[in-house]
Image 1: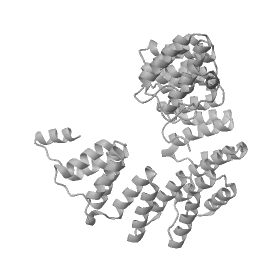
Image 2: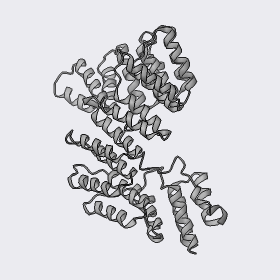
Image 3: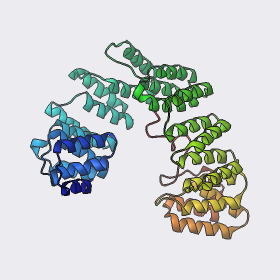
Image 4: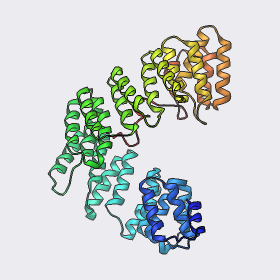
Length: 447
């Protein structure tokens, strides 16, 4: 962005600071935080522009998104006292809350209280933080404090409180709050509230109650939130087992016109959850025949679904289909395919597939520990300890194993007792974990 501005000036054209401020706003809206920060820094460093207090707050927020908390704190320390208005403290509070720095967030919140600048937004930030961290008693204290201070609730406050009740499985509290929201003429209840409550029931196996709330939620979807809302509802209806509601929602989704890959991904996830692989395959073929932009998540979903069923031939055909058009599978593709081969007793193919997963992986990542361990165990079980040791050597040299992973995989070759427990091995946080219900979902498409 800086080079573009510099070239513009070299051509003898003027740069209006008001225009650059608008560019920063637009880039923030489209989540191009790095470019927005570059413009903001150019304005002060080369343009001699003096940021207002609210613009300093924006700069602080952008630094957090681009560079992280350490740079945020360094920038905050450099801000003069006269420029540390409540907006700046509010931005700092957001940064701490998003990174779950509880004590630091509480300290900033206290500063805001001392300055007399607490409002609904700052309380919502803290309520959201307590909710994410499971500090439900603190939510109760903060809610009481809001009532004492006369701080009004907005929809975010209600929904955060609703989520806290759901997290505690406090259905009485949840139902009373919903009733109050419905009765309050100043509250415009939205689809999200019923979706949160419906998923709360779903967690406890109360599918009938969930369905009623999901259908209520559907009636409150605003025009500009249809894409996000329908994607949420697709997976929620699938979790209840209601195929009819999934297809009805899908038809509503398609009526919006052309949409991104995320819609297809969500629909396939929903159909796989319903164990309807034939329909999932139809959606996959529909996408593949008319795709504009290739998205490896799509075939990976199908490869995983087939592999989990032991249908390695279909999984293999799916992978071959994408390579025929010049598209490349990634490490996750090979990892999923290895699972299918293992289910089908194709040990040689499974080992070759897992080797490809290792060689094409991203730095710092490796195939699922369970898959690696199973390959080693199967090789040893066939009496081919040399091949097992060769695979283990490759894993160890190329994957930089944690101590836990090394011990577990080593035990599959050297200790029969430990190796027999391979089925109970769980992935650590450095492993791939692209489950059908989570990893391929579009951002913010779950509640």
